[in-house]
Image (tube, rainbow, N blue to C red; front, side, top):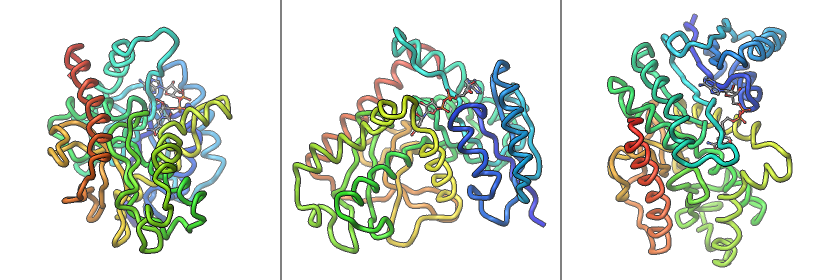
Length: 328
Ligand code: NAX
């Protein structure tokens, strides 16, 4: 029998947690052969709600669910962890300056990074979902010097999936026929959803769409602002689609990308495409053997270059702010 993987979810009593935990426990994260030990990390006032979610998880009688631990202590939460999904974060509230937001999150992701450094399993994989996701991942990685930097990632898979969905709506293509879409940069409104390399049924996606204005004035802003549109319509931020993207991200990381395709993920830059080393930026990535690799040697046109530079400039600003605040 395979020994259970320890999967830790922070913010487990939140909306994304509620959509995510059941999918993990049912085997969709790591596959049907891997039993899961769930660890739920919450802040003290939300522990009781987390216990309620755990009761529901019990009541699903998932064959793969080996056990559930609930804690408000990061050290306990990350002890022996194989997959860490960092969902809980401090949201921006009215009147909050960016510095306040970064400080509050630095106070969460710094100690969590340190706890991962201290206790995680050797094969630990970390996905940061909580916003600002890229910079929170940067902070966590900075506090985990003994963990290889490529184990820290930030989620742009939801943006990637949103791009696929918009392209399907526009062209009628099957999702599986759409390949090589990329989200570059920050998980924010500055992100660059890029179709220049994309194909639909083997043909250039830009050729199939044949409408540059649609790409620039509709596709890109629709993908980049989809989160706000969901809030406007639903009265709450994306939750099930975010949980779905987190499952996709980890599943792809562990099981690989299909031949000839890639996905998008925020990974620690090694200087690829002029993105300063150490920043957590979204790139086109393939996965194989349990590791992501940035797709090399793509030609960037002038428009793409400018859009990537603008989003990366925002990441640089966030990094400088975090440094000035002494958070890394
Ligand atoms: P909720 O407010 O419903 O849940 C967050 C939970 O985190 C709460 O239960 C809270 O008690 C807990 N929490 C806060 N601080 C904690 C800490 N230090 N340790 C453990 N738990 C803590 O938010 P939800 O809708 O679930 O969203 C969670 C995060 O995902 C937010 O930061 C949100 O902005 C971010 N998102 C990121 C997305 C992405 O694509 N990267 C998309 C969806 C989502 O907006």
